[in-house]
Length: 552
Image (tube, rainbow, N blue to C red; front, side):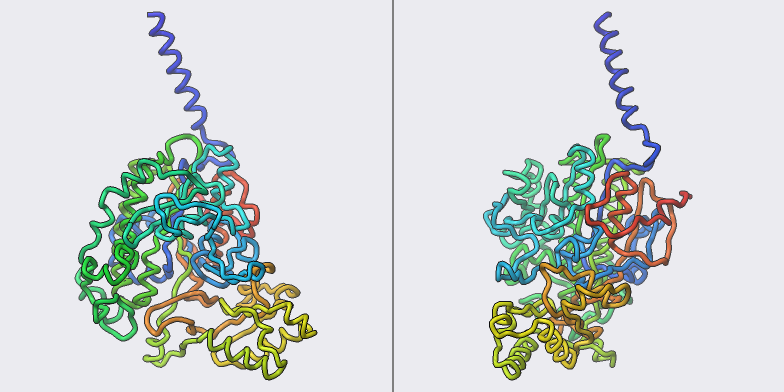
């Protein structure tokens, strides 16, 4: 009897202590058990409105029906690429501060092209491929997930997942417990690096061995009747890339048959099934990592990449893109259902956004008499060097031209006794006369002038003094460096900067606004919700109109 009483007292004491730690803090009463950040790669805001009637009730519509929709969310810098986008969302600042100026860039100190997450000092985990030699070491700022880890004395967990390494690694930050990304080809596994672990956890090994990925090597046809896909262009047209081994970019696609000529299992990344695989892995992650199971807020960053691959291949107006979003809506509903079951409805906060938008295919625009075109950066570099050879008798004054930036060869400029400011002006004047170049900015301008609006401000926010070039080009609207088929992104125009932003779950009222906000406001908003420090280089502001409004 005495032993029974002691046991009962211990249980009561334990439960009392648990109840005490679960008591809402008066300064941040809406703190969730789990924050889920969902990024949809290359999602334009208008996809929400365009495909609305095709969505079910439990995916995008649920988020908007129950959450808060920021209709005028934009990126405030260029270039609008995947790596800077993911980094800016989670650091709350722009490439000027966090240093991820592109997916890859020319490093004038290493004298080489570098990739945003490539790290020769780490080893692959889960593969022998160099695809596993990745880490966040080039990112200069903390993420909101890092700040949560620091605030909780590393008791709060952070996991990042994506098909792309950069989509998993950069959002999760420097202190993440793990980041996992997909390695296709003949493996089809989720992998990591020694930056995070020595070996994959058992649950990841189990997922990789489950044959789940290979089961998606099947026919890709439209989920709904293709005749109802009236929000997109014709299925067969001249503006889509398609897959090797199939003459036309038209439904259906026999993925098993096409896989051998399209990277084996890597083909799945360019279909909606890539997003389905990630949703499967996300649900497995919730179980395997016990996210949201204790009194310390966890972070789960999820980046759906297939929409970007599909947009690049088929273009933003394609039936393939429409089908991708209709299917993503189903996968999103699956993820929400799993979160409700595992963490509990009302116990987690989720935001959904995109890392950038995407532009119409210029060759399509030209066909309907809308201005658009193609800029060949290699030809520009060749012409520029010829110009410098004619005017300075030296074509080696330029070390590199990439990402619409001109990098000087400082040794050659000094050797030729040329004034740097003069050379900037001369090249800027030459470039501005070049066909399809809209604006030109020099290092001197960007370092010495404070631009507060327009494209100039976006260029300045994307300009990192240490990593960026000496002259920056801005192309005309709807002008890209890409193939004549498929869409791309990277500009400071609205089709690339305007991205959805929806908050949902604990602490989030129902509502919407068309008031302008910036993607860098997301991390400060989450920091305010959690009552933790903002990322250490944050320049964005908390979205107070949502945080301070009362729930329905």
